[in-house]
Length: 156
Image 1 (spheres, one colour):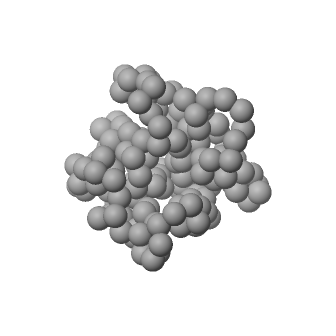
Image 2 (cartoon, one colour):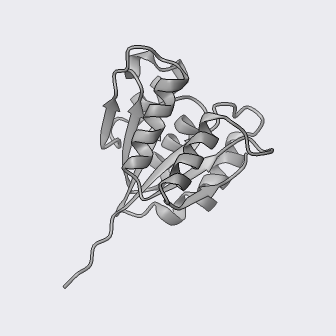
């Protein structure tokens, strides 16, 4: 009997990414995403700018894993950077989930993050370096901990 294991991983992270160059993020993703990014993996990524878009583009170019992009409203409501990353990656994205919330704001983004965690086996978070805060990234990591799911914190 063959045992097949699918690993579902949610990625969360800061939108503020200008303090590092693209090569630095590529190195981080190679170190912390690649070990989980085989053909049996499934990544859930928010459709925002910053870590969401950067990790999406890195996975598309460096992994065989399935990819689901999740947005709180619609893709059309996302910032230009995020819409462009999604458009460039459409051929590799397994699914785009539009949760179609009526009002975008912190509650909608937190609901999106909980949706991703609920469908994942683990979470990899890329918060801004510094103390544990109240950002959406930290709230997502805290939610994963409450759900007793493994979570990896990679400060950026």
